[in-house]
Length: 533
Ligand code: GLC
Image (tube, rainbow, N blue to C red):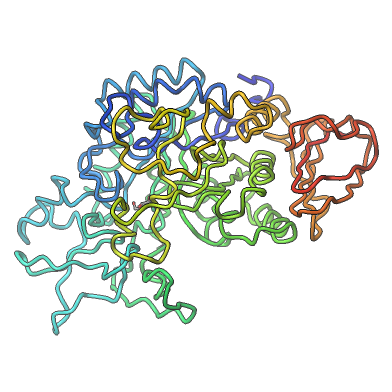
């Protein structure tokens, strides 16, 4: 597609990534759990939506203690999701449709059921002992350091049989691998080769900022800003358990594998401030192609804060580094719940018109809200460990609503999470037939982005940020597109610096705005893209 756009740019630069949460996308066999044949059956939906790549959250063999982020065989498929043949069929079908396939790579930890860990814990002198992080208790029998698990509780678990603690940044069922051991590193790099050879176009690398911990096991300092009600993991500042210098060599090694296969993309999950995030592009850009930029998830939702965020990000990018933006994922509250339903259309327009590769989380294109989960249906181990703090991620992982049938076309069985009623009118079939729906807006935005290189690869030029409006231009060759977003509930006048060729697109999805006036009145919560010359 878009050969003119692609000139001089890679697919992971001009393309749009769509995150599929496989357990909740489409069930094909009635067991209430999404699967690979289900994804294959829905590829045409994604093609019609207009995305370019799918990132599929973990599909590998797993006891599912953390829903696939606890892998027991990196080269096997979790049987309820299907088989390797199903995966190959999915990849072929995606490629036939011009879609790239990105898998999740979980290098920081395995499942405690992985054969490596079973061997490792079997005795102190097992050859795989050093594949994980085992340490003696302190003289008083307490854990080796004060490190706290991301999911609450100590990050060290005592193993009675061998008398040592092992470290786990997340659940005790997710022991951390010891990346200082070259055998671990080689075995994990081998996993990348296995999937690249099968035709995978890239990886989203999980929890990369946790890959190394301080060798001296120094205690993390207490966090003075921590209050009761916040995640227990934030009670300390993760000075010695996150973002350690050795991580960059490991990323460079992953990248070399990817480069060996050509035209592949490596994306890294690291929740870090910009000054530290930029190092994840690597020395001379030999690290991740795209270290995820999660800052839109936490920046106050107003034009001045967002304009300042964009400026700070653009200024921090190393020369030649390609930007990216994330508005949601399987771990974070949905846009319509976090920001309010009325903000969702301009949020979509922002995400798809900023300079940088956007990632859309499944269901955002329907404007879904978080679905409350009754206590007896809770699945997420985080919610189970530290209940009631609002940390549970089930509300954003509910099955994809495809139609108005009993289980929303997701399954003929009992869905693993309730579909809920709060999104009853938001499903693909209903929104496909509605020219003013969120789905229609996403389709229009994605089509516009594809047809206007200024939107995908153009430069970013700030125009205005006031209490009400955020405005910026995207420029490419002699084309200029003005994007203006009204964050408020009041109409806002917009001066158009240049001769407008009419709004190309309004979030209202109508044509009522004048086409040539030098100013226009933005309606409440309206966003527009206007071509100017
Ligand atoms: C990442 C994943 C999250 C998972 C965690 C542990 O943050 O996005 O879902 O629980 O890593 O692997």
